Image (cartoon, rainbow, N blue to C red; front, side, top):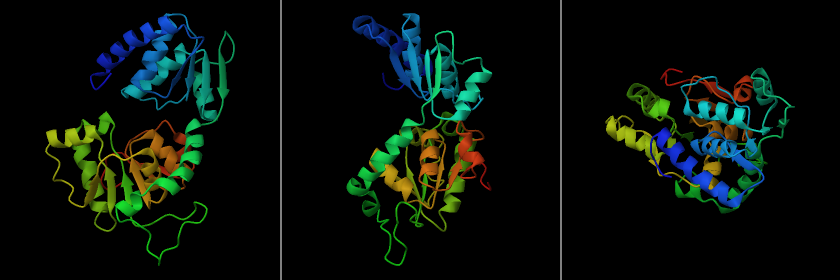
Length: 278
């Protein structure tokens, strides 16, 4: 199922997943995260009386206008096995009456994304050439990374894709102006999401930022390399916020809220929204 409205995507997936579940007759359906496919999988399974296991359960931003928040909320209330990444996620579910008992199991299993980062960042060190390709190789005068502790201070990394930012011309323009301002002194590397590029064309904002270094979307290994070696990260992505935290790279989140409040409480992540001065 390709691009389309939330209703169209979810509806088409619901129909097709149901057909597959009827054919395969699984013992349990495992869904991950907070996408439309997460909700479609959970709903199709629940309608057929199949148990649902939700990996990354219990996350909340408490902002219902976010499609991801709706997907999280409904999926958790449909799930039998709730596999939480943090203690806060357990607390969020408890407040909503979702706890162990009544054929439900809620468990803090840790974050599978962290496992992924640990494994693939080592692979990226061997295989990724993105720093060399973008001419971001660390000069000999700068300290080289030791055991993942020292960052390359030559650039900032930015990502932007959420509808709340891309579909609002004022927010989008404000964020681009801020990144352009930052780019006066230090390059801002910006892998451009197709959605963001499309909206920039519609709102005629392609010329707003002359100092931003736009690049095409990159692979997972290249993204990990760019994150790990950045001076700082500016993003509206939940996953990138976490990766910044694990890599010990300061993060500015281009939203007013986050489902990963642990990163904010630790002081490693700051919520700045679209405001240029922040």
